[in-house]
Image (cartoon, rainbow, N blue to C red):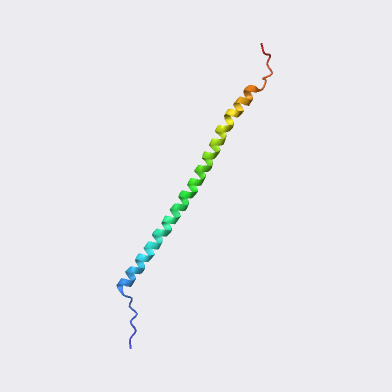
Length: 73
């Protein structure tokens, strides 16, 4: 009795398609993680810029209120 070790062609194609699908899903997940990381960095920079913008007018106003040490006429 001979064993049939030959794998049907349809099964090989199905396995190949499944591997391709897994690769596609993993690639999409990887790209989404990269996009999320870039998004987090950009939000942090935006938040810091907004804080600087809020602080800057307050510092300018504080500097205007301080006496400069020059005689006033």
